[in-house]
Image (cartoon, rainbow, N blue to C red):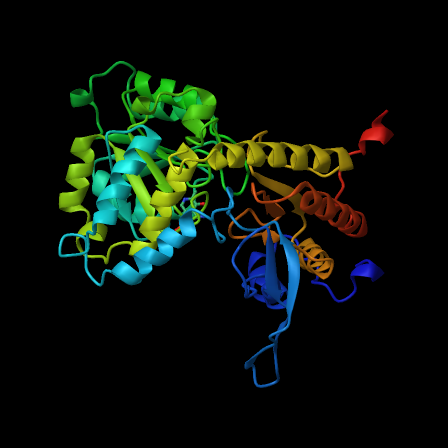
Length: 443
Ligand code: PMP
């Protein structure tokens, strides 16, 4: 209700229906804004989309050049790259944008086979299989791995693709408190008596599903403790590394590398190519037997057109850069830079008094806004000052836990980050979201 914020959305506490209908109408242009460039460290954001009286969309072609704090381009591969881009162009000419075939009927190119071998080697599992979409990887694979008579125990904050996959499986679903190994153990103990052999349990199979970095929280999974509980109760582990693979760990091998977990202790490793690798698609890496089983039985492998060949080439090339197999040390430099950038940005935001979720090293850092009415204010004020941020709200978060989710990239320069911090600080003062005393005031 502040005068400064006149024109922004009304405050509507607790009224979910009202909120979704009315507030989203007001803030719709904070979401789905078209971008007119690659999702690099700077992007061209299309300035304004408005509706005229006849409710037809009017688009302007003016763009606003902004520091990009919203894309999952963690290692900066989603922009022209001296090694990847020429190879991707070559693959586009050789194979075309689409295989126009499913994997089992002409849709497997040499590139698909090479990528699957490389992904398996990179994540440290014996075999891997790729899919055209990360979302589908979860939602189509989980129902193949488990069904009626099985039990899925899922972290409360798991991604929607996992939730939908679990629901589609027909298995019984239980949730455990976010990132809590002790609550996971409580749930397991409730479901089975400790020490019972698999053959004598009420469940055909138990799968525990977690994420490496939680996409709305920026938190690392308590993986070593969760694996210990799974081993004790002989449950399978399914790890979604969408946001962690490539982005964390000394050599980019994700949460396992960062937390010292042997990949052999994770039964199913899932990941997407849409973040650190700057491509499209997803993968499952597991034992040879599981991957073979998926190849024979998974409808998304048998009936869906395979990954676009240039996208596959992008995966191969970016992993090679990360591994240093392009003959340079650019991969190691990118990994060092994303860690440095993430830790710098997080600590500066905290010093300014913002409430920032997540852990050190995580490139995902949500700034809490709480009140959903602050979404349009934060988003538009930042945009006006050439900083593009992503805001997240209900239903992706609980109604009153709205947040701005910053994603840091190795391609951000120190100047980009300092400019963004200055803008975010000003906007934070304007809309009142600095909940903690600033560093020198504390003293
Ligand atoms: N899993 C998680 C944890 C995600 O955050 C996402 C999307 N951001 C997906 C799966 C789906 O991946 P994609 O966007 O590549 O389809």
